[in-house]
Length: 457
Picture 1: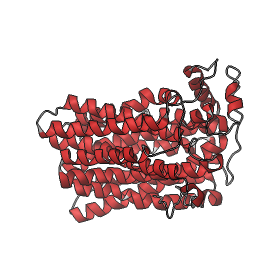
Picture 2: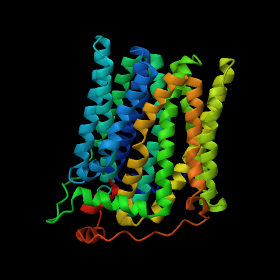
Picture 3: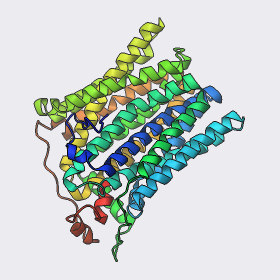
């Protein structure tokens, strides 16, 4: 994770020190980092809440995870357009307060014996919906805090924090539940949102709501342009499809995995968190390799091989038996290899996606791929819970882990696999005659450009 004194991007390259002299950016980065840790920890705390406190069945756990992930599918495309017309700092502050209150309510309800599965489902959906708003808002806010030539470095720092939180947050959540009990863990996670609130509210730069053009294009028009552009490009179509297959299978795997470790392998919450933490060092290695391997062996070869290795390693998990020490060491090795391969794929795919996408379409292409890919996670969680109930945990884990290998198979059979050492050139964006002001505004300074805020969001 980058720091103000020694900052590195998620590709392993240092972030220019001038960026860290911007006090408002530092406040945004610290708030976003705390918020991401709280969000990722809650993704483990709430399911463990259901398993340990409510004794939820596999099917109920699948439903809980699906409900928490549903806002990504239901809201992400629309939130991108809505947040563009709001003050992003206000949006982030309000969502931090909302998520802290939701987790605090879960803890209080549990302590007084009022918490049931319906209440937990409602709170999980609320936390998921507010997280969608925050994630879009922090990206949109960046263009109003830094100079245009610092956008790449700023995004690298923010996404590096996000990647670190995705790795360390679940481990932190598992450890908190094991050491402090589920209600206290939920309260502890809420503190991260409080820290984010305190940091972001100190941003001093005045932010005005972007002016709306007289003939502003409708939300559906802009969404349609992003969908059409991704569908028309073979590389982006492949990225979209591979992401959807992976996210669906991985959501199913994690639903079964969170049941398999404590119930079949009889591991404590601390050990479960430790097993998840192993992906952290692996991801760090993956980030370092991503800066070197694609230019040496070709982007396509690296993508296919890294995805096959990182996803395929989960096939070993259902075979684990025997002494706890050996089992834990094997889980650590699986987590390390998965983290390394996954981060290598993430960084390489992002570079390819950005290279083939015109500047004026970056935001909508990212939102479209996120919508299609992450939008499959609720269905994957439901399928994982259903399979766990019908087939048992070991068989379900084997089947869902095998499904993850469909993602590298999709890439291997596509033009993506033939990409060489050089990144592909950018393609032309579709015509935008319905709202020419978007083209004009994309050339203006990003500090107050309405369209630039949309693309980043």
